[in-house]
Length: 83
View 1 (cartoon, rainbow, N blue to C red):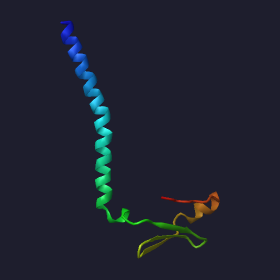
View 2 (view 1 turned 30 degrees about the horizontal axis):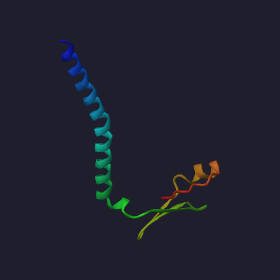
View 3 (view 1 turned 120 degrees about the vertical axis):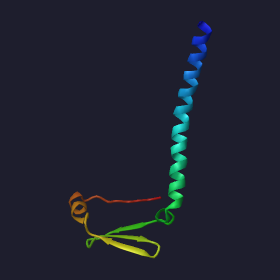
View 4 (view 1 turned 90 degrees about the vertical axis):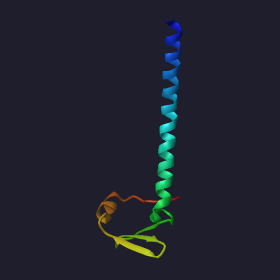
């Protein structure tokens, strides 16, 4: 009976350790595969903040966004995005 409890305890500990290490590694590999499949993540983005708005440049694509400019002016903070 005591031998059965030890084997059971070892089994549960190994299962727990396997679960704790396997799940994060599996998630990381899934995310890596997902990011490689999306073209938007393949080239870096450049953000420029001016009084007119926020300009986003990625390769040949350019976008102008004015929706968050009011909050950024009120906050008076600098936003630097570095890779």
